[in-house]
Image (cartoon, rainbow, N blue to C red; front, side, top):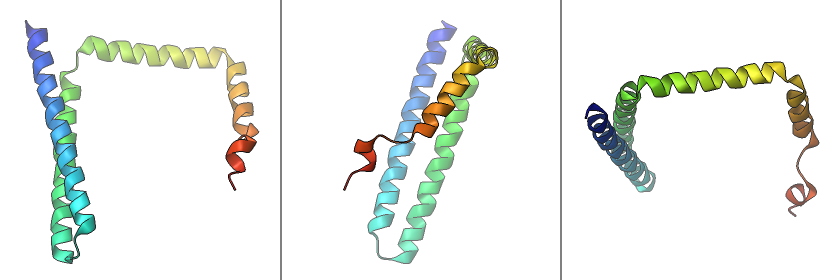
Length: 110
């Protein structure tokens, strides 16, 4: 029962995050089109408030996450790091791929 309660509250928090993000986008769009400097500053401050609210909601979501999920994510990251340490050849291949550059069809866009 506790898991369902957590899932529904997390779902509501995600919805609130989305609402705050959409409100921020709306405010920044209005600020871009406004010619009045005072109104623009007010809109940007309101958008900044929306960012703080989104971050607060996201922190709540992260704190509610099941500790098993956190432990699994940490274990997976550690396993990937150990695999990368054991297999240095894959790092050499990725360095070679980085040095190859872009294909001709991307660089010759003229």
